[in-house]
Image (cartoon, rainbow, N blue to C red; front, side, top):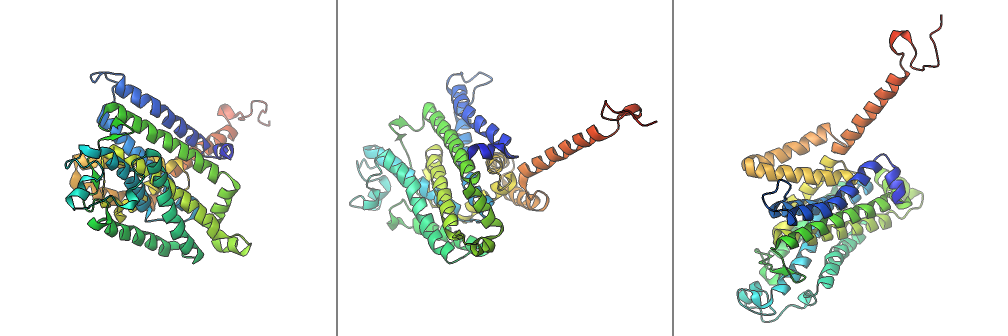
Length: 389
């Protein structure tokens, strides 16, 4: 399945991207930790953290491309799955603080002490263990996606109606997590993390390790999505995207295929959120904001949906531009983002990777035409043939 995906027209790009991610997982930490700060090749710790954050966004974009690019499900609610994975990791990090918090309570997080909670809520149990937290970072978004998809796809909700419902789900979670009585920190969320797996979360070595984990997770998820889309299942998903009614007519249970890929995508988004939180140091209800889901759609559109590699490239490029714009011209960033989305929609409907494919195909066609056309001095392009007398 993977070899079939690598043999396609985008196989070379995907293979290079996997190798780049694997190389970056080794090279960037080495350049950060092994070289002194004054060395020209030294990568500062803040840059490592920033690049790690970009990689988590790229993983979210890859998850969205799996459902939008290959199954035609335009989700405007993937930020919900991302945030739920982030909260699962945030709960683990809060439990690791223990008595080092402001109020010194060994069990209750600071915000619970401040709000006069008397005991730890039952749904916080187990989050003092890293494996349990990682399982929840995958299981909670996956379970929500499964339940949501079970009702939506069986009811044959599609198109813009499904997009609106996914956005409504995200907004409902945003309002719920803002409430103090939910037990997730309310408006302030979860922050002031101390360590992860016993390592100081602010240490350079920990930051480098988190970057490497993000790069490896993105590479692994890219391989998984390539296996899915390169299999017979992938062909069915594309057929559902292009002609769902026809697939139903010939006997396929379309809702089962959509439910599977929707759940897998949500779990990938949850993993992205779990890797995001320890690198940025906070998780709050703002991560559920519908605008975050729309931004993810823009990353996929810019890179090229239905390509797997394109959304990764688009997420990194757009967020790099965002970092530069918000520092140089913060008041123009939203205008630039809107203009970018309009420009891509009008002039690059297949994204940057699609544009690259067209340019490469055109160059290849011109090369063939030049090879067939007569050479100089009236001679044929084939040296074995001479012009007729």
